Image (cartoon, helix red, strand yellow):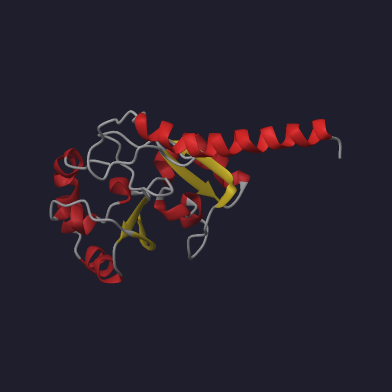
Length: 184
């Protein structure tokens, strides 16, 4: 190896060592700007998720994924005995929630008439709403009553709701009050 090449490599290595030694000191002397965030608040969301909802949005959704009704296809509740999980390639963002569908046809049906397919009470358990509380539900516990889809937290809540017609009237009378307290 020529002497000039060797000297160049030595100088380059020495520069790297000096840089590595000086970099932590430079970083320590320049404090990073801090922004005040409320305790427990997320600073950024993972790429591809919609913005966090604001007050007044009513659909229950998974705050980690943004999926409405845990990713189940809302149209599928009317097509078979059990709901079907939606697929990532058939997604639609509506009012800050990500809705998944089992097929393009189901996505288009929802897009054309979402009020028909969206669960009542924003997907919250109507027995909880009847008591004045927004109670998360399990999309596997559901009932179609007339043209409305209701989701429940437990099978017992579902049975109680179906046996007691007064619960629906009570839930409807308290929904506005419950909705005003939902901070999502």
